Image (tube, rainbow, N blue to C red; front, side):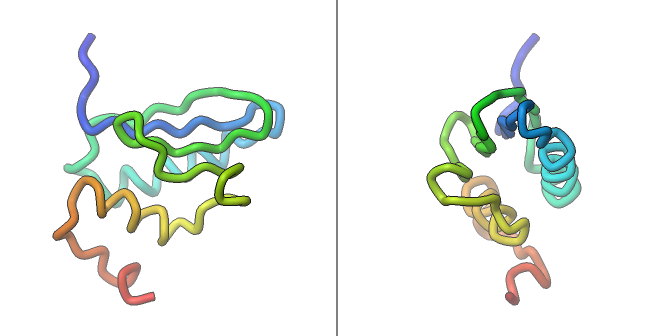
Length: 94
């Protein structure tokens, strides 16, 4: 089995029950980047983790940024890495 690129990973804390948040975040990113994302993986973790990585590079870390990402900001961060010339419409106008 081959990994499709770019690969986005969302590692979430199972102890904190953040699966729904991770799933919703994945759904929003897949809906926005239908053709640009090759794969999205949900990775169970522990210890309060909620990290978003793109091809192994951390885009957002709950512990480092002291909270969850605003979805509009997260979309911009992902877009800047995988489709920098793409407009996000109303999300860019914030």
